[in-house]
Image (cartoon, rainbow, N blue to C red; front, side, top):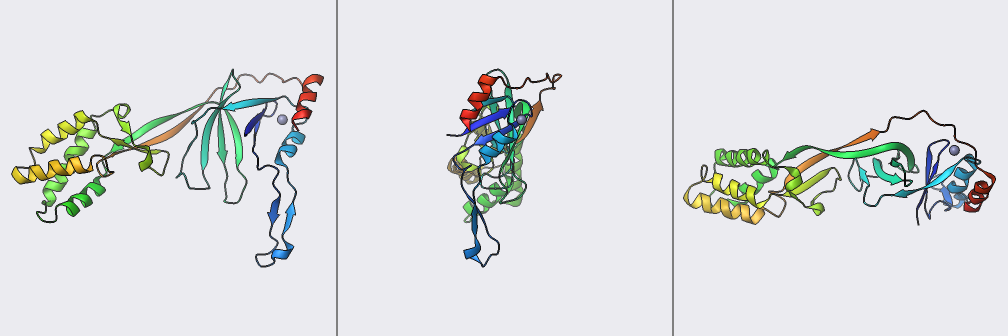
Length: 253
Ligand SMILES: [Zn+2]
């Protein structure tokens, strides 16, 4: 079980995981494996030693609150998650600057929010799909552009909070795909009458119903993380731990 420990004196945090006591393997050379030596490491013990005599508290990590600025699989990135001590909320910034470095944690007193900075149609994907689907009766470039412009125009009237999120489509936590709602869909179909006539209209109607759920016609929203730091109140001098608490801290080691 992971345990997030906060040193109130230094505002340092430590995430205790089952891996803290694993030996670290040091390769002196890429080719000389026999000289590889395992160094005993215990990051938790080091943290407790560094903060000996300081006031420590456990923070509870708020479930599903983690968000990061790069793709899920990217190892070098900044992530944020929320934690609380029951009275105050915190944001924990988790990062590493280089691959192979251990993850570092920084505490920010405050909160973060996500702001939607854009909501767009996937113009290039729609264009490619229209060309692929209309091989027998190709649409003119003008009609393709008009369709994309129309869809984009309609999207600008949509509120992202009213849309259904499609989580599995994205590899980046700040890029979210949404399915267009039924009202937008009807509006799009109605307005397509201005661009397409006869067989073209039936074809575009089929195109929309075929692709409204499969990625091409999904709307892509891009979010930004805003960390709002709570103004630091005059830091009260934190009393050193009482003898009883010192005993408790010792037991944690
Ligand atoms: Zn400390």
